[in-house]
Image (tube, rainbow, N blue to C red):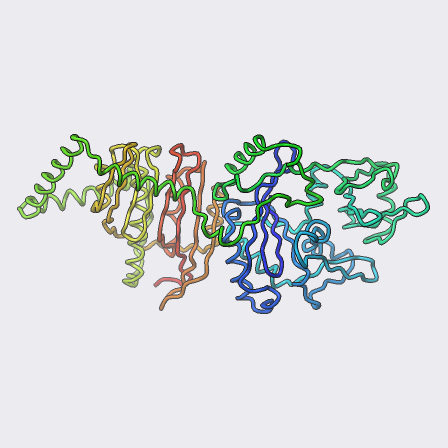
Length: 558
């Protein structure tokens, strides 16, 4: 689960989940805004820029797909004209924005965080805040792939999980009862007067609440340290809250994906567990949690990138320690290059050209790769777009040929963009299998049988297809077919003739790499591939990722 706490000046993000029926808190991150939201609340662009910049610095959000979030809004962001006044017929619409969690859960931990209720004639309380900020936040979260956002208070999540009817909180000398029922949100204050329980400050339908409290079975979850004997009715079944097993984020790498982070957090909990580490989430959810600044966030780099850099560093160091066999290989390579120069200047140049066409342009190669792309006989298109299409096709084909030519277990890393192709391959098949893609600029070998190559790709021609796909079409196709896809839509880029919508698609195991590539190859004529990146850092195919950087042309091509 993710909790996003939005205040006037900062964005807080906590990530937690259940382990063995116990809630475990994994991380807590704070990112400060460039400008306070209350000062720019009427400027949509500035609000959007502040929120997007902050959210993109939180690595947790980059690794989670389809996860519900509880979003708490600072009351200082509310606007008088946006306060909702109505009756229970508006319950579904109003409850979507009801963030009752703020007062009880985070009021003491964050400055100026509270709740804003107005009482109308029908005794219904509604929470109010700036709809501009919420709609902007929702849009941005969708753009970065955070698709399923819930504005449900965290209390209702615990109620649903434990099948409780209400939650009881400390409230000075008494207690505060919160219930999420089929009649709506009901609550009241419970206190003791002359040794008798007294119900007051009722929110919602009074008769329904009294009926609920006096029913034969009423299960209550205790959120705070309340004296149950004094503040519980005789017919109530009391459930003690499950406390959080606290995990300090210093021992958790925030660059890991969520599943790996959970495993590490469990190991950390086993090693560090003692009675002092056991905290009550309801009283203080963020005890001993390291509060990371934005400066620390910026310094974090991905583990995968570090591994690739280590591969490169090892390759450089190993290249200086050539054994006799390697020296002999270099000598043979020099002889081969000399021979090619002689051939190029001879009458055999046509033979080389035919050989190149055989491996690069032959239709039989495409058939063996199962990458049939249906082309059209449409009218001639603009030269600039034709060049971009050819480049897009070249990038896709280079990755397709790699997966078709090599054993997938031997492919550690691929980065294909523009006409530059980089790969890290396990084994000695790199030279003979990938040299057909283009001119090999550099080739290095490390001590653990890893080859790293930089190749300047041969440009390949592609004709236009007949059909188009919008961004929604693309997402619909991919989300229907794959369970591990994630996407981000960036701000549009305008050229002299077209508007490009940058779209980033990310896939992770267990989907098939070749199947994904073939689906991408059949997207519409307005979909241009700018870059493809594949990472298999642990060489097991259990944590690989494949990312596509696309441009979607909005205007129709002629």
